[in-house]
Length: 386
Image 1: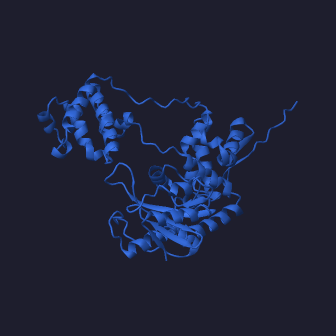
Image 2 (image 1 turned 120 degrees about the horizontal axis):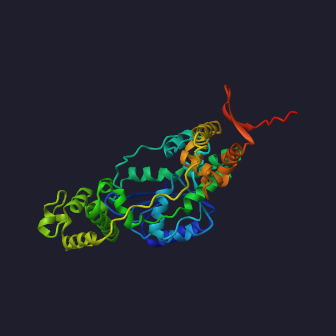
Image 3 (image 1 turned 45 degrees about the vertical axis):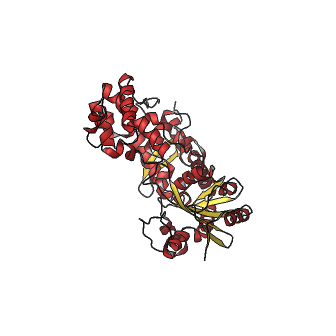
């Protein structure tokens, strides 16, 4: 059974209890199909012997920020979007997190679903729910609420089992480091000035048309954030590119652009768009700066596919999700000697960075053995003979 919290006194009572809890599970249900920012519909909590569903449609969830700012460990699954919700709704994210999806990656599972973790760790199936459920509709049915609370009901038990498995492999610190990287990830909206680069058709524009598209895309992003609606609702991509190409100077000209209709031009928006077009015509089109990185030494290029194959095999043998260990780009960054390369940091340096350094320095060599595949082994140096 769970408690449904839909008023401030009950929420504050939950917050008071949570402040004393060393660990709690938390999840959210939200929508963002018709908004710029995620709109939270439910917050599910599990702690001690309690299960709680908080209804953000009835009560402001900001007081949960006091819990997140405390010392308790928040257990989540695939936490990235939940952290965005909390950052937006509470102004803070939990101080310490344990992401069960990340943790499972260090046990060989590749981005497992919550349902698959329940089956693997507890031998039980989550109740089936409609993935298209409208969580913002009220009242919610008992079936919907039961489905929502099931996401956290056993999450602390799953965390305990995953933690024990990680401790047995001496990988708990690795998993916690990776969770901390996710927690610290900057959760800010993209720069409106770069919004044009996410519109495929804009990349082919040149001259004044590109300048207009860049200004329009930035204006659209800012207006979408201000009015909390998806950017495509403000101005569809097709219409934005059409305006950039036609460069209309009147409302009548705007109305001839494909993809535009009356709902996009209400409340003075048409005049705003025309002003943005003129600003774009006077602007200097810009290109996104190329990544500033050194070229990989041509002598090291043949090593990239070999090292990538070794890293992938090492990850499989160690039963770690290869996507967690490192990508080809990570390998190239290490070989180039890029400052802050991922494979030079933390557990990745220990697992793969240092062996690759030994390989590059000549202290080790890459060999193939039929029973073990690719291995990095100490290099035998021949003593010079007279």
